[in-house]
Image 1: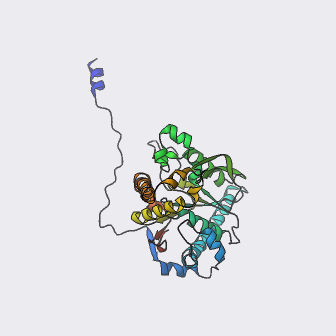
Image 2: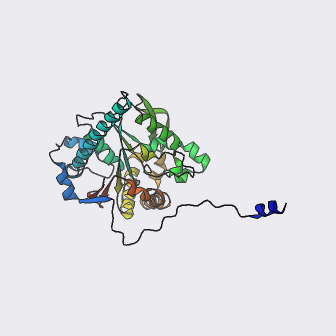
Image 3: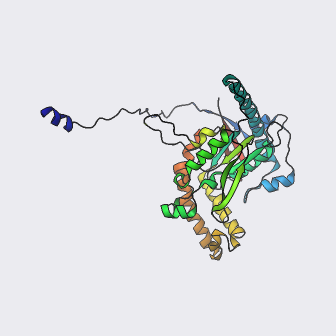
Length: 337
């Protein structure tokens, strides 16, 4: 009886955890090779310019005008690199299928594009889609945004998450993982929800259909975020586990803030003027009040999400495109193999 009382009074056992020592401040190693704009442009080699001037207008963003120089010096070398990666993966997949004795169909090459609100992810994704589709080895290129996997506004309201829209918890991550798993497995037809920035909500009953593309580009805020690791080592997939290559669009937070406010004010005088628009309410505000509201939305929601969830994933990207205040990419950091 004494023994029983003694055992009950013992403190609970604490399982050992691996606590790595902090990295020294003078660590010189970097997993990236960094290129200046000029050096990166030289890697274009003989890759032809396949976009016409009128196409550049269509691919430009709300406040970002895409130039010929940007495509030639940044995106043509990148499309060449990705074309080589796709070809290498196709060969690897064929070798693996031969080893396993099965005649699997093609495996889509998936590219993740991450970064803050207003940093230009959508422009980068659209340009890559257009350029990669011109290569004969992979003519079928699709693009989706993870906005389609946000919970509908009604669900966000019920969970008290409307002011955290865009944060990791506002996404139906299970649905996104299942979608990517089906695409990566070569399923013939996979559906994804559709999000409307005009209505600021998921469009009920509407779907984007993905039918075995050669390349799928997945653009989103938090696509490089890691999941929590389980103690027992069970499989908990990350969204990025399905990526064959990933790109992070980077800029100084103060610069992104200015872009966000500029875009908000431009939309206020264009798309928001439609009474059916979710943000139509801001049209009636004075210029100063509208700008103050944009600054509030940036500082209370988007900046917090950038600092807490998006920036910490930058070093997980295969490529980092660093922008200056005029939207030009000034440097390219490519992860070493």
